[in-house]
Amino acid sequence: MLFIFGKQKDGHEYSQTGAVYETFTHIKEVFLQELQHASKGRFTAPTTEPADSPADKPSASERPVDLASASDPKFIALQAGWKPNTLFVKRDGDAVYELQELTNFGAHFKEQVIGPFEADEMDVKFDDLGKIFKLFRGKLREKLPHDAGKYRIDRSEHYQREIERCKVFLAFCKAAMSHAAAETERLQFYINPAEVRVKVERIAKGALQLLPATELQKISAVEGPSSLKAKSGSHVFYVNAPPQARSNQTTVSKQAVFSAFWWVKVTDDQFEANLKKTKISVDDIVVPMYENTKVLKEFDELVVFIGQDK
Image 1 (cartoon, helix red, strand yellow):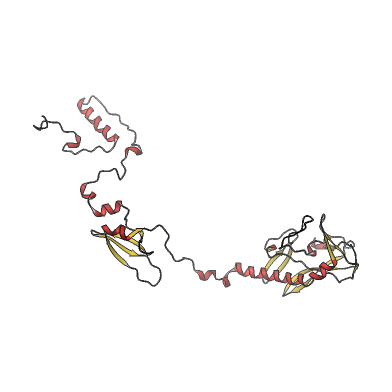
Image 2 (image 1 turned 180 degrees about the horizontal axis):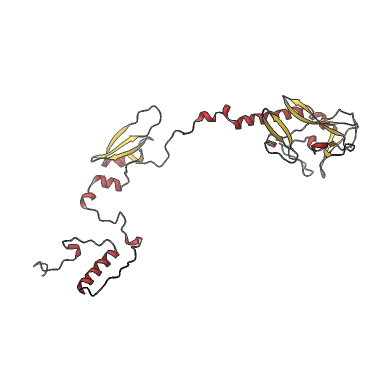
């Protein structure tokens, strides 16, 4: 009856102020104001209030949307993910386009191209957006920002050093190969301890030359405890021994190499030694070599005098 005769009391949602409660804190503030007014100033509201919790704050999707926005095709497109500066790919191919702007009639797209090609541009009505495009989830082809000229192989210090390292490896291989047959015919390898001994009746003085063979990966810029120093061009390298057998194996790795140079015993007693250290030159690279200083008999152990090179 009060409503029929217009005598009802409007709440805040129907009042002339058009109050809208956004959070619980807002509701509390209005309640305290009314309480203070009803008590004619006898009630004093607390001066400090706890901050709104994240749950009190409405999210973008929960905020009131007026009817005009809800019916605006731009607003609807944005809510559906059709946002400017976003990449999309055509459903009937692999061309990638950037959505540049939303207009009153649809969206304007521009093709993403690299090279001397003209970029395609197109306008698509709102109703056709999903029919023509879908969200691009890959990565665009892009031009590498680095100057490739600075990294040419003929300008690379690293590759120049690798070339010189290979030259050292080839020189050592050539030297070792030239004496490999004579070495294995006259010498026998032993382990526990590692040593090499004569297995023929006699080797004349100066008739045995031992040259170091090793793997390419054993030639580096890092000096080891028994490294051989080698130089190629302006680069210095250190040549290290290949892996040695550690037990009486019936089979060995295909990469294994037996080089007597690395197995001989070293001494600083010149009278005990039967080898001396010397050198040869192969392709302008100095390769160290051991040569026997005495007549060698069967089962003699090979011992080299290192002197000051200890």
